[in-house]
Amino acid sequence: MTNSIFSTYSTAENRVTSTILAVFEKLNSSTVTRILQVLMEDSTIELIEYENQVKFYDSVPDGRIKGMFDYIIETKVVPNTINKKQIINHCELLMYDFSRLFVLTPDCDYPKTLKELDSKYTNKIIWGNFDKIIEGINSVLQESILLLDREKFLLMELKEFIINQRLTAEDYSKKTLVIPAGFAWDFYKKYSLYRCQANRTFQQSSYMGFYADGQIKEYFPKILGYIDSLNIQTDNLDTIEIITVNSTNEQDIRDKLIEIKSKLQANEWNENFKYIILTEINDKETFKNDNPINNVKISYSDKRTAFVQKQTYLNIDELKGKKYTSEL
Image (cartoon, rainbow, N blue to C red; front, side, top):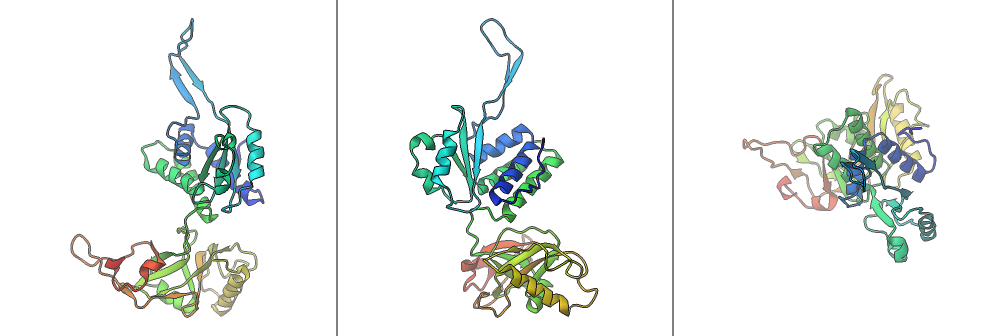
């Protein structure tokens, strides 16, 4: 029976594993092979081997299809949480010489706990992180591999799922999302929100910057959380799903939205938007630069061009003290 890609497991580790396997199950074997080659940093991995004119002692069949593949998977969704005893128990249960334990975690580097194991176990273990899965997906999407539209959709959905579950190993504590903000800058100053089309995706970031009036404004509010799709007039603000960032209290976000709603007119904002909730302009968590950063970006035709077209990402430390975009 095939699995739904929308896993219903309540445990995070089971939910993540089930979702990944459900997507892989619906892809062709060559696509899965390519993703695993990137994930495991081994270009020789083959799930299925195809041979023509196979030569046996007294016969030559026209072809053969064979597979030698047996992985069991242990997934962790929090860095540095591998249990040594659990890993040893998994290794002891491997059935064949070619069986392997695949350990998937959000750690940046090969986990210390795995390094401490005896070689008889480490030789059976393959470690990878979620960044490598995304790298494998990007590789498949960018290479000249024939993919059905359905497969492209599934891969993009899996990529967004991993990002939205905050499973990547990147340190985003200083990552700053900078957006074009002709309207958004004034909207932020009034509401401490960023509003855009529902379900728009961004890379995970801790701060937001606003490019307006030919400059990156000097205020960089901290991102507290977001709601992918919300009609603030009709949705129940007590039950909507909120993704928190930077250890924000979820109820604080609900209270803020309820307060904003109470000040709106009856039909105002009466459609679905994505909302990113931000610290207020004078909040101590909002980073204030010494000055705005003026745009001096020039196009190939020697005309001034916008620094940000859709969005870009910068490090908050790299913004400090800068006066011109040419310094970034």
